[in-house]
Length: 374
Ligand code: ADP
Ligand code: MG
Image 1: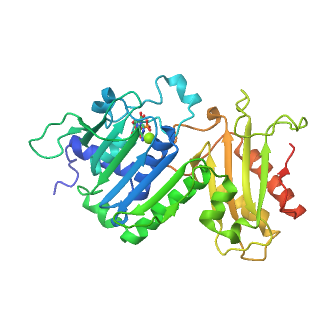
Image 2: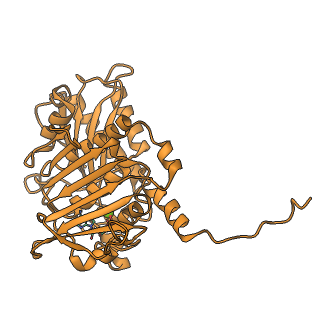
Image 3: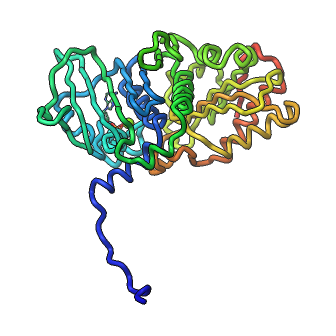
């Protein structure tokens, strides 16, 4: 019996390592889509169109009219840790984009067939490139790996086919195509609400009518009405809160244009929450921190407690909350797929937001906007 003899340590095959790492970032079609939406939003377009086949397992395509990708960058586009969003370590604390780790496209290329058609404004035609395992690949055996000129509009179209074709265990862990599709629509719905100036369209391949469609010139309460319905929208109360002393209330009207102070502790939030007339069985919490869709069980619990005193037992609200905090107080090393977030002064900020909710809800006048002074 040699059970005490250790087995030799072996180096895993490179392609296996990459596939395992990719699986940690891309769990299912909806998580791939989240990465692609964030890239399209980073690229600054006003339109995002998504086409899906078989719940995204067969095909997931996203087309934007953003800045495009330079032809010269196409050869490293799908390599791991290549990004246009971060160049020095100092930048880490000032990051304002969704991405910066350069892992999404690389990961996708390890677990699916990835192709890209892209055109910048200065380019006279679009370029198409295919990727496999982080590198440029030939579309078919024997064909060239070099990007090919093609017709196309300004912007980028990313196509993912046969997700998890080489990781059967991942594939078998997925739910039905309809379940995966509803997760896709869920992610999309939330980003569409948070980005009312971007037109989103999502449809199944071959279907004449979209399953989700928003205009490019809207406001958050309108997109909530469009996507969650009138029953929610008619009971919404707007709440804002911030770290600022808002005594000079006439100067700080606009959340959008105002930069945060250069104080690492400064923060502000905008929320749209349902009043006491609205009662759901499940809480809907759309939480964006620095424009990234995240989860926070602490916040969820705090808000449940606020509504406990307002709604009948078992009834729950709809909450949309966008919180902006100084990038220096979010831990950027938290992995991007770790949706549960933590940040500096979390407890104090949550308490102030809860107070603002409480105040707005007890006034019970849902036709005006409440300002919370701290
Ligand atoms: P990250 O977003 O962390 O930089 P990604 O792998 O998601 O990493 O993307 C790598 C790079 O590819 C980005 O930094 C960006 O330069 C470019 N890119 C990806 N998608 C798009 C897009 N839709 N439009 C323009 N550029 C894009
Ligand atoms: Mg990205």
